[in-house]
Image (cartoon, rainbow, N blue to C red):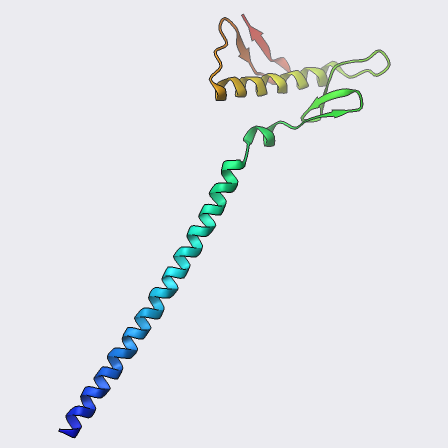
Length: 124
């Protein structure tokens, strides 16, 4: 009888140990999942605040000239800018305007933007 009780006690201690191990594993899995959810939520919030157009088109100024992606837009009598650079700037502006009209769903009516780099145009 004493031997049977000892065996039953050993079995109960073994079952308790197995349950404790299962609990620890479940808590670790829960912590891992919670961490993954937190990371994913943070990344989603960051991506929702990202504006692709800001990354694609850097608009600034260089001296007296407005610039888009470092291309100067315009000429002055005392400061000559090559036509190739001006055309490239207007091509970038056309591409930006095309992207904005498509993103915002603005109807262009009889006009159509043709963004083609330095050879961009507006078709009527």
